[in-house]
Length: 397
Image 1 (tube, rainbow, N blue to C red):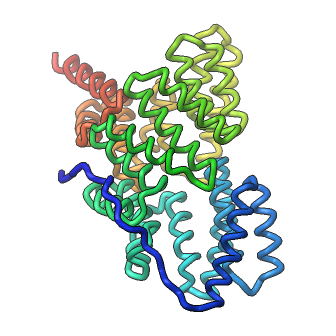
Image 2 (image 1 turned 90 degrees about the vertical axis):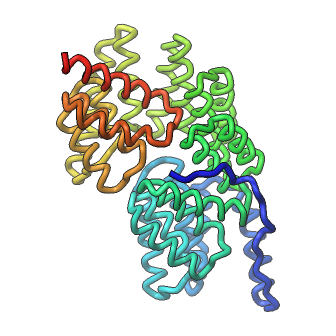
Image 3 (image 1 turned 135 degrees about the vertical axis):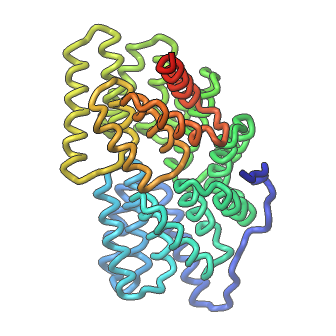
């Protein structure tokens, strides 16, 4: 597979020139609005843009700003009802004017959030033909291609994005790509550039700090990981991925009480399967059987909702079940369903592990090889590969 270490060559930023006085005045008004909005919480932005969308109903720009605020709220909470609201607004805007470029750009983001990766790639390519010098389009194309396993295409898209605009969004993606290709030191340095570049959204900076903390954690640099997660919490208060990251570090240090407290904080904000599974393990480890039972009941409830909504893919539930040797049929079903949407190395790892837990070792090895194709320095990949190899060796005796 072709890959070169790049992503650091900056080109002049693209700018469109306009001689229209109306456009200049409009840009100044938008800049003033943006500078004001930056200081507001997302809920306050939603309230403000909702009012503006009503009072200026003839201008779709404010509808799109409201949709963007809903997308941001989805990122912060993982509550997909906000994404549904954003999608409804964008559909209405595009039904009136299917060429609305601003709405089309944001619609791609909703497609990515809904794991419609093939559709997002197609939409991104269409927008690139309209705005080839817009880094957003290259970023969403790279994101979609990464998820479907087209790493060569994603590399080209991300290179173009960085060249057009070296900022937090492009550096963050570049750092992730370097990690995928077994360059953790390079990933760390580029992620630091992303954080230094900053963003008008504190959550975006906190996201990068959590990514940095995870790279440190996976490469055994626990003090740096803890510092990154704590910095993320200072940057964006109540950020559940940062609480979860800090909990992982504390658990690795043997501080079960501290880990439990931070997982509880994360879970109170967003009840993800990962948090319930981690708390289940920690409560069992510390002799709190009844509390562990409650977390298992929560996992059952999450799966019940998942089944009721017809969900066929969920990597988080795959590991929550497979790691604990429960609901192994369901874990395999969800892992197989994941490949309908994603064909990336993490989906291959999830399927390999579910197959292993179902004692289908030969198939597990096949998918584990796919997961390790890029030599990504994921400790869990090595652990899974070792377990599968040992199972195959034992079966052959």
